[in-house]
Length: 253
Image 1 (cartoon, rainbow, N blue to C red):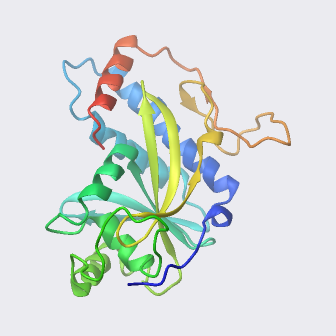
Image 2 (cartoon, rainbow, N blue to C red):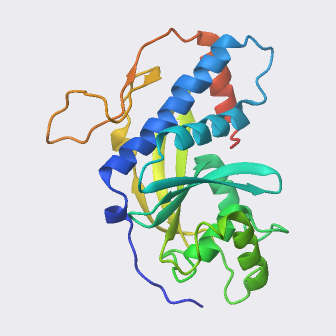
């Protein structure tokens, strides 16, 4: 059993990074996805859960990249995604819906092959252990070390070495009626149990439509956190909100 090493990420996720993450999520969910629905009057919207992830990955790739932040593509059994690597603070992130992450935590040990979140957590957070364990792996980890190491190397081994001091976190989000409701950053141990977390809800404001970029000149009180605000550029079709609400109830990633 690995040593229960205490570690937090509060100081490793600065306010400007939190702000930019929320900006990408709100832009993808409340602007890009809403405009797609308004522009396509379809009978059904079964692709919405997948489009949501595609729009989020696109926003991350187009708006989060900087001198210190890299967005790396990876593929796992045909599923394409993105890994955000903050080189300044030595953290790597994935973005996954809250419902999907809860599902992964429950089924991690029973899968025939390890999910990519398990590969990242095993490779980068192997020495960590959650203070409250939800899963019972004990010393009999369900996957061999060779399988885990080889799987990780095939994902992004060339871009991020296992012994480089980086940590792996998952950004989870919750959507209600087409609006970003909640967002957290979770640092996970190799069993996908939560070691520590940071909440980003304070950066969300209940305003609608398009994204205000992080470098916008918006007035704010110096004692408060800057929040991502969206300008009203178009009127959203009420039927699209119903569609998104129904999609949310299905609890898909």
